[in-house]
Length: 506
Image (cartoon, rainbow, N blue to C red; front, side, top):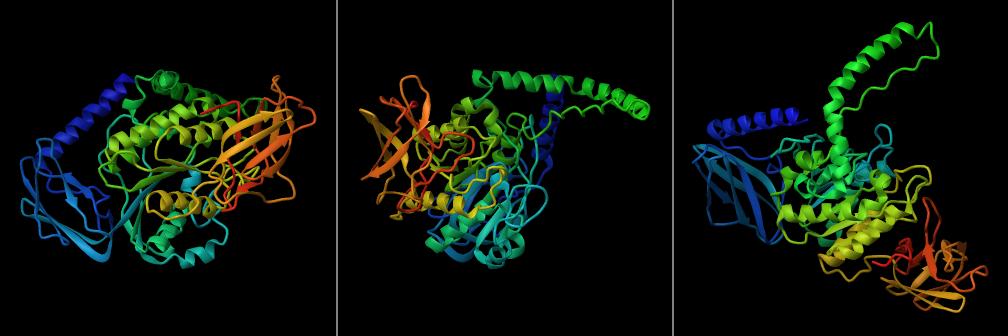
């Protein structure tokens, strides 16, 4: 693998050196026509040019001319002060060495990044495979005509070794045609913000289905951490053995083709896995997030975790590390990070949901969206993407924009055991708890032996009191604990309670 890495690195160094010496003024793709800049703050503007050249920037909303000098490596950057939100089209003129670039039709408002795996990637319209489209897709797409909402869809690409400084994509005005292939959750989230704020909204989608959090995490935050040691070892083996395995596959496949008619029991060999895939460590961070990092954003919405189910016990540390790494790289402080807890599904372990709940409990300025009421036992991609999107928007509206709304469903905080009963207390009760059916489903209780039994549960004021005839002295209680389950505890705002087990305290 060292030889492969060195080849990539030398190529990258030569390319960077050439650009620094000979390239003219150039901007990253995310700084293009139709963009939205974060309002009332300092926003980063950057690009490339001829080493030593002076770059002059003139924003239409200011009388000030900004100036930067291109460094020896061909890069320049500076910060512009934006106005408060504005739907009036603005522009930025950038000149250097007699070359002029004008970024046109700029709006100033709220910018959010939407990232994660397939459930965030899931588009509005029906496409191929699991991309089955949202309910009422035709109707909702037809209504998606918002000139003040702009979308930027990062092109999917891989780069496990070479640090990339730009990505594919372009800003587009939101129209029915443009929204079809865009993230449904990102769209509904942005629409809800726009309807409430009456301000322009910019949405950046950077997603890839079937990916693990480690692919989205910078190398510098993993390479010296023993948590990832086994993954690094496995990845190195894949790269080192790929050429040999490919040659062996060619020989085996030739033998299979020659003998399959005479030997019906012979099995077709499997194609060796290309190590340069979307699960390679840091590959998506390098190719699809790092190029965005200078761009000033308001916050992040995230939906991922299903592909980490194989290491659910590590996910709290893995996910938390990724969030902290992003914040460190962005240098915007504790950027809001709101995420969706994975839905009930027959292959998704409760430990993964618990890890997500633990992340919310221990990492500041995060928010968790529970969707126990919209899961599908056999489809890991529930079609209802509007529900999680609107719940993500509640977090943003309440925490970032000061709306007096209930942002979260009940979250376990404490339990008191008395005789044969357990009284469970919750955060985010709001105006009270309620059950959507005739009886509360999903509670179980256990004694000191840890054997759980289905429990009867009753709402008494802001608590849920549970008991089971088989457990005379309860010590533990849990709720919604399983891969797929049906539960029905909510607060009066209609937000569902998160699954939990009392044996784990955050």
